[in-house]
Image (cartoon, rainbow, N blue to C red):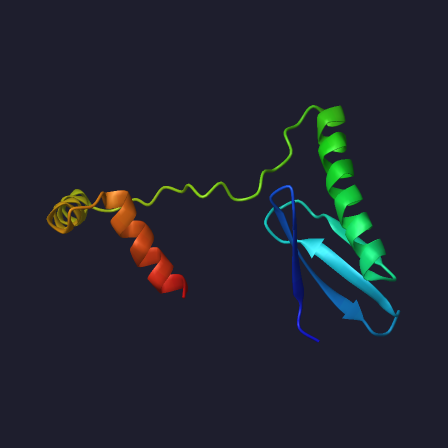
Length: 111
C-alpha cells in the first residue's frame, strides 16, 4: 500500500498500514526531529498525529529549545557572480524578478 500524506500546523506526515500489527503508523517527514504516531483507525491516527505535534511543541518549550519548523520556503543558493548577473539580466528581459524566474524554474524541475 502506498504511503498517504497528512498535514497539521505546517507539519507534513506520511502514514501507511502496518499489516503485521494491523495498525496505521505515521511519521512527520518535514523535520529532522523524529515525530511518530499510530492508530487502529483513521480517527485514532489523526488524533495521535495532532497530539504528537502538540506534545513535541510542548516538550521543546519545556526544554527551552525552539521546535524545528517545517520548511520555510526560503533557502540560499550560492552561484558565481557571473551567473548571478546573467540570471538577473535574463529575468529583467522577461520583465520579472529574479526570484519569480527561479521559482518558476524550480517548479518545472519539481514537476
